[in-house]
Amino acid sequence: MDKMSKVIEKRSSVRSSITKLVKRVQALGEETEDLNSLSELLELIETKEEILKKYDSEVEDLITDPEKFKVELKGSEEYDDKILSAKIKLKSKLKTFTEKTVQESHPSLNKSNVSENAASALKLPKLEIPRFSGDSNFMEFFGCFDSAIGSNDSLSKIEKFQYLKSLLSPPAYNVVAGFELNEKNYDSCLELLKQRYGRTDFIINSYMSKLLNLEPVRNSSHVKSLRRLYDEIEVNIRNLRALNVTEGSYGHLLNPLLLKLLPQDVVLDFHRKRSKDKNCEVSEIMTFLRNEVESREICESVTSNPKSSEIKLTFSQNCQNFQTYQRNYSKPKNVSTAATLHTQVKSICIFCDSANCHDTVNCKVLDIEQKINKLKVERRCWNCFKKNHMSRSCKSGVVCKRCFSKFHHESVCRKNIKPINSAINASDRQTESESNSNNSSLVSNKNVDNISVSHNNVSAKNKAFLQTCSIYACSDKRSALTNAILDSASHKSFISAKLVKALNLKIIRFEELAI
Image (cartoon, rainbow, N blue to C red; front, side, top):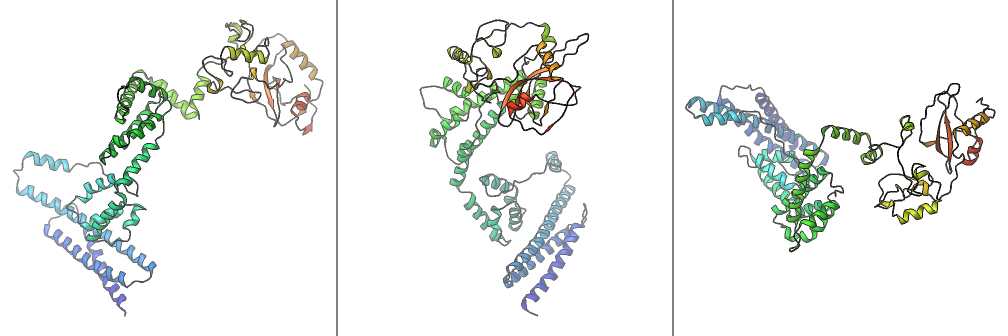
């Protein structure tokens, strides 16, 4: 039998003894009658632990295969975890048993001690130390670890080392992965982590990068976004201040960057209120921003309506662009209904100044160039025809249906696309409907988009008038304005041969239809 086999056999015997001791610890009940038995069990486990570490070290020195070394290291760590868990449980029971014995032997303890013991027996929320993976939060992690584990005198350095390794994630874990569990290596690993991730210049650069990469807020009505921005700036500035980096060393660089993160009206208000006698400082910006956010939060809480907030929340969940949704649906549309047949609204055409004759978009008195010249003279938007802004900044969301431009309305579009079927009155539609009843129509598989419908219900004694609408029929390369008749009882949909020719549609088949 070679040397390695002998060492492994001896270690197996020690591991077997440790397993039995761990099972004894796990089998302990809530109440233990003998303090000596607990102390004896703890001493046995610590003795076996020292012997096991000795054999583990000898085996590791004799192994030359890297794969076997990894397996051996994993097995050693499993036994270390078992021993650590058993020792913690035993120490906890010893502490509880000792306190109970002291209370029984000294019944004259004052009420304050009793209340402290009762408070310590309460089930407090479980505190979790954040894991560290190698980012700039090393100081926060080290503070939590040191207060909970590093400064705990009841834990040995080996136990602290075990906790430290369990709280690290790659790449930070790679720094301590190859260290053996002993007291010297615990101190060495802490020092190595401080050298690697506790460097002041590294942490300062990280905080400055966070300040430079903050997401700006473009709308001053978004109070929550302003609050989030203020909190992020304040946290990073305080962290820099804790590292003895004052605002004076980076204020001139940071001031314009902070102002760029704020909405334009907030920046304007800041410059209006600030003192012109001294240079702008970071603290001045932060004080103003804090007061601004607090004032807006108070105003929002006083004036907000819970029901309207619920409605807006529903809209924002169902629409990808909530602002577009509000813009399109918050105001009533000019759609013809049965109610509008009996309602007269005074409307004045901005092109020819006629009242109640026609809408502005349907004006035929002036040609396109005359309309454009009038818009220029009156400095109106080419899209919504309102004053005080240009079409490039128009928020109406209107798109030209002829050339699909976002910068002008279709009524002033220079692209001359004449409609296939011009607007005709009710008698013309009836005549056309009767003439088409004797002709066959061509069937196409092209879809028709952008339909706006006006419902006009007229009751007649012997006649039924179908619904009509003006639509833009589009093919792959062409589009045309035409009139459509909507028959809800029809089993077929068709278009005229004239429209097929205008859109250059491919004919699939011919059918005979009785209209």
